[in-house]
Amino acid sequence: MYERILAGFDGSAPALRALEEAIGVAKVHGAKLRIVYVVDEGLVVAPGVPNANLAESESGLWQRGRALLDEAGARARNAGVEADTVLLEEMAHKPGARLIEQALEWPADLIVCGTHGRRGIRRLLLGSDSEYVLRHTPVPLLLVRAG
Image (cartoon, rainbow, N blue to C red; front, side, top):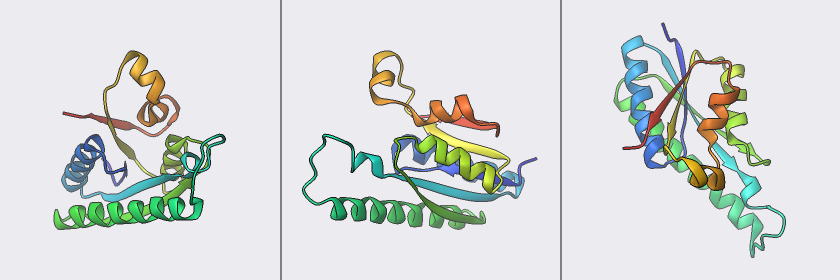
């Protein structure tokens, strides 16, 4: 049923649970897995937020993303799943939009995302990339809740 599964990954506990689920689904279906990390550079260059060393902060975000993707890709391959990784950039605080874009370009049959399961004011204050994907994607979506 699924041939191409895209997993959003940011290194968080919910993302790790979602990655494990994506690996399991990919293994059952013999699907290819694409693991995507979105570097939200808007966090570094947000107006009114002082930052002592912008270049170093940006570089650190990219290095962290690459390291997390390397670990995630190795985890998938160790489980016997064909996987590649993609590091994307986002400047407008909408990593979910970049995830959907990648799912359409690749094209993916399924998107797998982790969610913290926040509700109420915590969700409003912190935002939710997985909720953005849920509301906007035309691609089937599997949301995996944190423990």
